[in-house]
Amino acid sequence: MTTRTTSRHAGDTKSRILDAAETLFIEYGYEAMSLRQITSKAEVNLAAVNYHFGSKESLMHAMLSRRLDLLNEERLKLLDRFDSLLGSRLTCEHVLGAMFIPALRVSRDTRIGGKAFLRLLGRAYTDPSPFIRDFLGAHYASVAVRFFDAFQRALPHLPREELGWRLHFAIGALSGVLAGADTDSLISEFSQGKSMNDLQLIARLASLIVSALKAPLPDASQLAVFASVLGDAGSDDIACEAVRQAQTDQATHGSAPPAGTSEPPSTAQSDDPQNFGTRYAAQG
Image 1: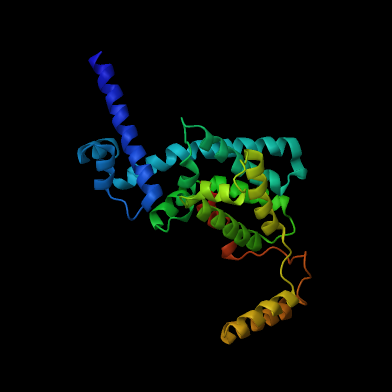
Image 2: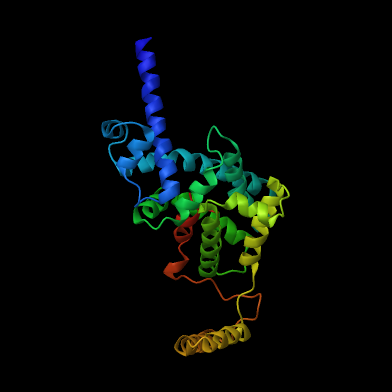
């Protein structure tokens, strides 16, 4: 009986430490949180943290893994399901659904995530700490590559480099919203006080990101418009550089591609899908 009680107490202590680290990470980010804050919030001493985890870094690994490992397992299962059902007819909406739906499920289940889960995702994707970025990139690279390849199959007209940039921008913007403390109040405000179910929420998120991903590549006339904006803003040096770059691209590849078409996929380093993975992966 004594052994069982001791074991349960040790498990409770470990869970309290993980919960405290998660709450502080959501609120302050990795660099601003300290072991002293964690031990105070968990009501344990530093020896307990060292016993269960050894260091702040190992504690953060355990805290992120207990949430993100399960999430990514569910994401891959759903993506597998969509692949089996649709094959070559896989759509961008289905790939986004495989990312969003498991996250919403976890956020609705207090046993494995709860309401703070989406904020945890947002913080993980936007935290500037190299430690957090390296952790996500190293541990979830295969998941990121799998989703990047799925997006590429669903959006074959986009060069890899362009797709990487669009996913980076879209998921980064979404993560910034999720990381905020006022997400629920914003949703209520935008919906004019009306309740929003999961279908409506997913549809709104997906429609925004799908539009960004499917947008045609900017043609020469659109580049000229933004060059004019830069000029009007007093940034003639940037505008002139942009025009020179556009002219170089035209000389290299011929006339600028019309809206809705693309050039052959680039092999530049910036098309590495792991760049997208550090945003999403665990990102949304």
